[in-house]
Length: 198
Image 1 (cartoon, helix red, strand yellow):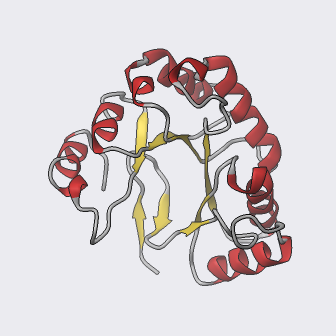
Image 2 (cartoon, rainbow, N blue to C red; image 1 turned 60 degrees about the vertical axis):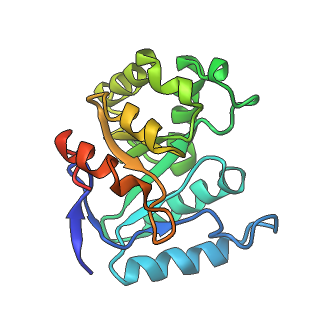
């Protein structure tokens, strides 16, 4: 396994990481902890040290399983989780610092950790990227020791470009594959300028 520094974090992570959207079974089925345990432990045994989850995956059960299994591991494994998609309605006005702080506190409890390695805003509405107070909250949470790093999970390249204008944003998660190449047109170059190691 090869390892690389993730974005502007100090996390040295495996080039292949594990996403846990359906780690407990297929979407809509009952969550299987044994299935999650088998998948996560197999990943760790094969050198994967970065696991991505979210508070909305299987209504927090994915987050809980990831935390429990990682805490039981003898290996150093970094956890990324996400927040914001629980807001209903999922609109700009619903994004308040109080609501987001509570999501982070809930994730800390659910994961069973004192500090989250990486928290990501989970595809918020475009208007949120123009609200400094939202990103300021995550700066505060970093200072308080509740999170090590924060970033964004985005749906549009334009949102990624707006997000990296905030100095505290350490990572950007976006879709890039053989079918969706738009990030290579401008975003990767801009990210390098902002010292995001993508």
